[in-house]
Image 1 (cartoon, rainbow, N blue to C red):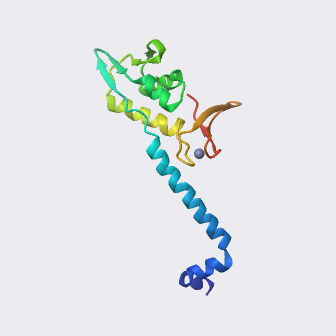
Image 2: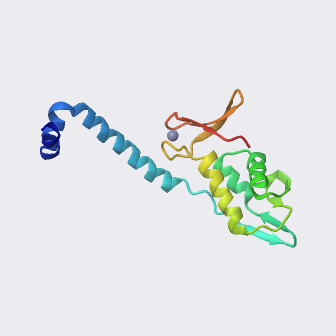
Image 3: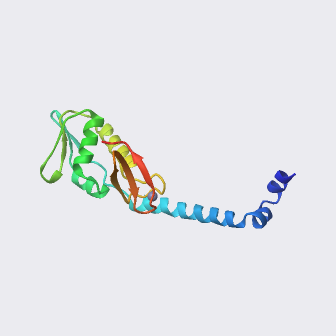
Length: 155
Ligand SMILES: [Zn+2]
């Protein structure tokens, strides 16, 4: 019978038995909603500009991208090199990343996206304000916005 009461007088039941829980649920929902919207608005990393030149693949605006992600250019380069199975080199000041073979630009863009999802954006709150820290032998993505710590694969 109690189950029926729950479904019929939902509001009253909440108000009497778990008002606090209900309120904190609302608060949680509100907290989550704007943060996703905000992060979507403000976090738009530059789209990669990728050129195939003879036998190489150039990410022309590499430095711009890593600056927006606030990540070490060498780390991002190493990740892409591993994922795309190609040796790489960085031009002066990490302005460009050059992969030493021809790779479909869509594939390159896809791996950059994946890097952002795994190594930049906090899976709890969706914000990009994170740092990578090394705790003993584990890598952790630490969120400066919500404090969450998420283990991530080593690169
Ligand atoms: Zn977070």
